[in-house]
Image 1 (cartoon, helix red, strand yellow):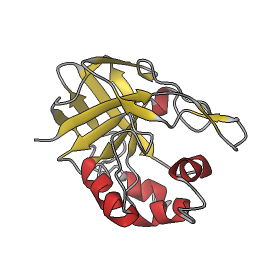
Image 2 (tube, rainbow, N blue to C red):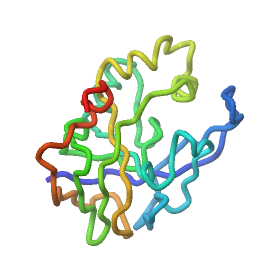
Image 3 (cartoon, rainbow, N blue to C red):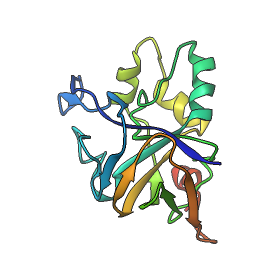
Amino acid sequence: MPRVLAVCAVHELHPDAGPVGVTGIDKRPLDGPVRVGPYGVRADVQASRRHHGGLDKAVYAYAQEDAEFWEQELGRAVPPGLFGENLRTEGIDVNAVVVGEQWQVGERLILEVTSPRTPCATFARWLGAPHERGWVKRFADERRLGPYFRVVRSGDAQAGDEIVVLSRPEAAPTILDVFAGRS
């Protein structure tokens, strides 16, 4: 059964060498049910709404299975939220989702896939560049990106919630097709 392992939001903003000067990538798991509305997880913020957040990138999901791959590759723990995700999932291939696919999370929340994550320099700095030299290309080349979602129906989400795929448009591209420019 696909499920949510953690719901994450910003723990604190950190100084960043990028153009905004701060980053909201430091996300950590929240306890209990958390409200998710049109702009994402309550208490979450994005320092750069140009590239993150907003209505079409309200929620970012990353799979535990992919995090475990990176734990082996990086030789370190990849706890929920480390990659800036709002939902850490288990039991669903988040990289095979198609644009327009809808998920129900828990009792009421409905999310719709909009796009893949595009790794950026802030992500590389957060992971400790230059230690992870070439991180953006490496992450992209592995095609373990995770999807962004818009919120179709607001609701609460929490660890343990079941994920049900409600619909999957037949001719829609996967997020990996979109990332590769094949949509």
